[in-house]
Amino acid sequence: MKNITCVIVVLIWGLSTVSSLAQNRKYVSQFSEFQSYFNPALTGYEGSVVRGFVRNQWGGIEGAPMTYFVNAELDFGELAGEMDPALMGKNAVSVNFLQDNFGAFRESELMLNYASRIRLTERHNLRLGAGINYQSIRLDGNSLTAEELNDPTIANYIGTFSNMNTVDFNLGIALTHAKYYFSYGVQRVTGGEIQNGDEFMDGYPAEQMIMAGYREALGENLAVSANGFYRSRKDLPEVFDFNLKLLMRDMFWVGLGHRVNYANSVQAGFLFGKFRAGYVYEYPMAKSYLLSGGVHEFSLVFNIFRPNERRETDEVLIW
Image 1: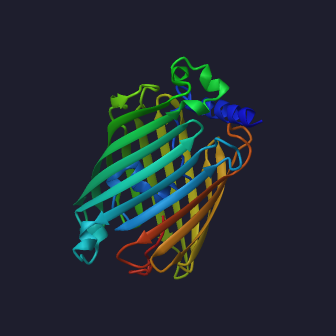
Image 2: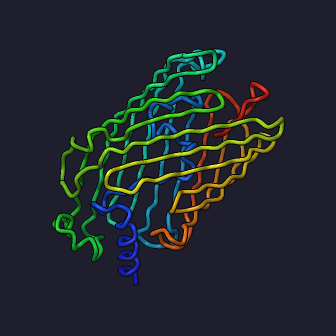
Image 3: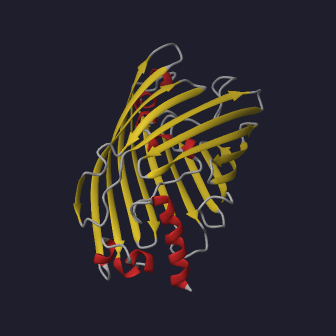
C-alpha cells in the first residue's frame, strides 16, 4: 500500500513537471507575504523583517511535498533611522533558505538578494534587485518508486545517495508605492548551467514572474488588499494566482485565493505587536491534476524595528 501511494503521488506530480520528477515548481499560496523570494527587487519593501512558512501538501500521504522557508531582510534606511525608510532608504539585503522534500528528493536552496532604490517622485520608487542562488538536490536511490525506476537517467542511481549542486542568478525590477506595486523578475537566469556533482536532472529552465498588488484603507477599522501573480516557464504550464484580503481593525484578516485551473484557498490571519501570523487552506479544483485533499500553509512574520501600527491614517499593514 505504501508503494502504491507513492506511485500515485509521483504520477500526478509528474504531469505538472513534465521533464523530470526532480523538477517541481514551488507554490506558495501566500505569495504576497514572500515577495522578495520571487523577485529580489522587492527586498526590503516591507522594511526589516524575519519571515517563514511551512507548507504541507496532500497531508497524510507518504512522500507528499513538504516545504519549509525562512528569510531575513534588512533595510539600511530603517537601520539608519530614516523618517520614512520605505521611501528614503536606498539599499536592502536579504538571506533566504528553502527546503523542499518530495518523495526520493530533498532540495535545499540558499539565496542572497540585494536591492537598490531610486526615488522617482514624492511617493514612488524604482527598485532594482539581483540575487545569487545556490541549490543542492539530494536523491535517495533507496526510495525510488516504480515510476521513477522507468526513468533511464534516475534509474542509474538505484540504491545510492546522490547529490547535484547548481549556482544561478535572479534579477528583478519593480515600481513601488505605499499603496501599490508592479514587478517583473527572472529566476535562474542561466537555466542551471553552472552545476557539479551527479547529473540526474537538466537543471531548471529560467522562469519569468510578474507580480502586482494594490491596497487601500476603507476607514479606521477596515482595509483591503489585492494581489496577482503570473509565472511562465518553457517546460511547465503558465500559472496565474490571485489573492484578496480584508483586514479588520488592524488586528485580523480573512481572504480568498485562486490559482487558475488548479486550486482555490481560504485564508485567515492576525497581527499582534511586531508579529503577523497567517494560515491558508488550499483545495484543488475538480479539473486539476492534483490529488484530492487539502494543502495547509502556515506563515509567521516578525517586524524587527516597528510594530504593526499605522503611521498614517490611510496606511495598510498587510499585502
